[in-house]
Length: 362
Length: 247
Image (cartoon, rainbow over all chains, first blue to last red; front, side):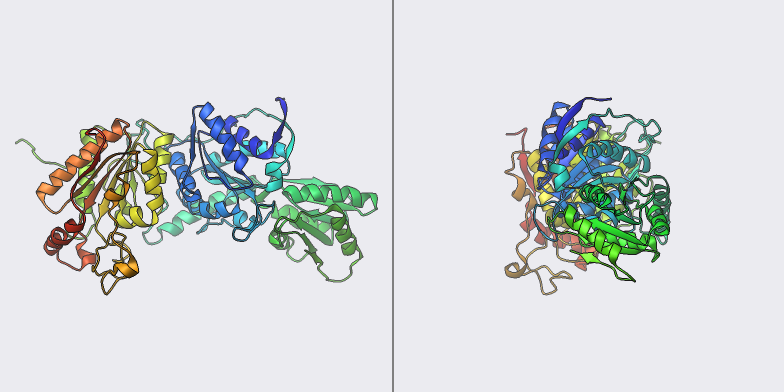
């Protein structure tokens, strides 16, 4: 076991990245992830690695594109409005099959929105966000320890699949301080070597071309179908989730990140009041645990999605259950955080409801 | 019999797909000759820009990456910082460098990034079919200024060398043209200096290459060269704009 420390979420991500061998960090300030950029500005230079505060988010992600192409572990971080700008580079990196790791510490949107914690970028994180048929592996941690651990894993899966991977946190997780065990980075050992494709390497004298352009007739479709095989493998092998008290549950909450922390407390309160409720927490929001959520519909008639957005993950849960359960929604937005008593009230309402009524609380 | 002229090793034995009279082939070749002369082929990385030369990898016999429109200086920054032993050649056109990528260009220059930029300026967007570029001359016609560029409506043609020459990170800055053997030789001398500057790690360097686009100018190749000399070179003065060694 590593050393136990007390650390802020944003800093924990930075330290995990340093430990995981991130060689190049490129970032641009935006609240509520500024501590991460600040942390990297010190630690990366201390380690003799690359840190640049870029002129924009677009420049930052394209610097990642370059650094990844020469085979370095590379990273950027931002919040919603900045992630919107980075989508250009993320799409290009997915197309060119380059690994990178990026962090979205979400704030309220749309537009400039506010700087309060939110889960409003769920669609952006899980639907690709940029243009084209592509996917990004996305972890949704719910405490500082997980921010640390999934950052390390994020670099590994990016390298394994030659694909961007990310963490979707929110302003609370980024800013909160919690005890944390500094688990040592363990190289999984089975990662593919970058030697055959990295640029500028004199040991590979044959010219190498890295691109996302495929103009010949049928060429892009061929390429995209190859990418799809990779996404299928990721969907098969990389789904992660946590289950709490599902065995005797009569209703199941589905929540991730900070909303899942609230839901977990609501579960304890509701259980004391005799409501048999369980909690299903997706840890990967892409690949989404569709099958596991589908299976919940065989156990219970009612699911309650708790999220800090207005029904963005709700859509995935409804997709998963395919009409075999009623999916209710407790959504807060723009910095609103679900309140335990209100979630419990919502559970009670659902338990008392009859017929096909879907109860949505905002 | 002695062989006195051949393709550089850094050029693949391919026929380019550029239109007759286009300047890209000449600019590509000059880059390739210098890659050979400096012995850089195994660690060189070219950036193929958006536009007509997006398939530069078909012609250059060294590693190539294709960057998004305007982002080549950021990609070059990431590559050179990530692999300081590489030799990075950022090859861009006027829309790429002086319109959508202005911010990336200015900030890479200001940071004094150690890569070479070859800036092909033909005063028009080529691949997308002849739209106005930031470098299109006043009065010049294009698909998106069909009555001629009116500076009151569309702004003035940007002189990139003059724009960036005062940035402290800039080490070498010159403008050449590919309209005549004399200018081709001079442009290659500029490029050679830029390569040396990057190899020596002295800062950011750029060589602008004023180049014809007969197809989108709507002229025969010979006429295009004449038009270039009589019009473009009036606005885009040839010469060295910054040379940190001479200062």
